[in-house]
Length: 313
Image 1 (cartoon, rainbow, N blue to C red):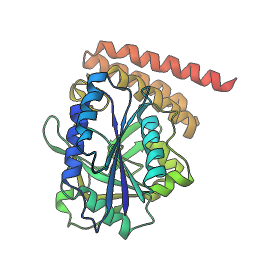
Image 2: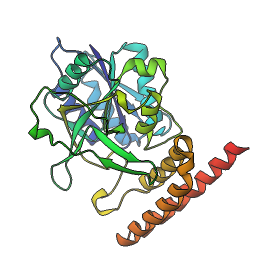
Image 3: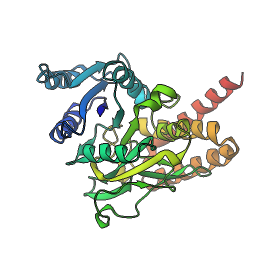
Image 4: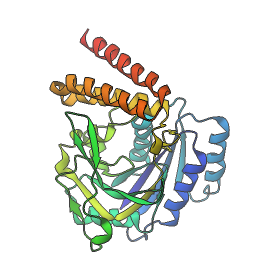
């Protein structure tokens, strides 16, 4: 089985290198699959890009890592699409693993995904078991999330705890609405037949949109034995996501993408989401005294209205 891993880097060279190291240290046996890694740099600063280039140079004689330098920050969907196009053209992969650069791959994580995909080929996307590293190592989600479309609230699936399950089992989870974007092991034919990720979203909600593209949540599975450790907020530049001090980029695009997604797939819910989200976010920012977050919130709402009116013309 041919596997192409897509990693997005944006001014996080050390984080990306650590992810690659964990990935290469836990490659599957040759009998299980062949691995290729595509690193897409989303127009990082020169020094950050240079660190990535220097690291990748050591693999020149064994070209399993390829670096693509974007001339702009294309976002999550746009950056992944650049990597997906390259992988489809050059590696003819069976599966494409969309992996956050702020994860540490644990032993047999990829091997477990490969075995799950072979055993249940009808599933188009597999999610991993995610543990968060901050503020301490703890179980975060079993493959993905439920999503309350009326209130635009995602909830991680945390039952059953993976340590209470026997190994080697794979689960379709009807209650999972979308896989965690941290790790999406996607059948390459999804991108060949239904197209690439929707670049309407610069950041966030791409996973939910992708599930709609593949025909709904019944095509998603969870692989408990594929375990990843994730440092939440690193890839988006959040300062301290546990204290509500997220980056302006995350605040802005989280709200803008939520409104765009609701308009596209749940238009009747848009008035509720529009008001509820603005109210709840404002309360949270006040509670955390994160007053600077109000500006990206209001900018997101203003830009959504401009985007909506432009589409109506």
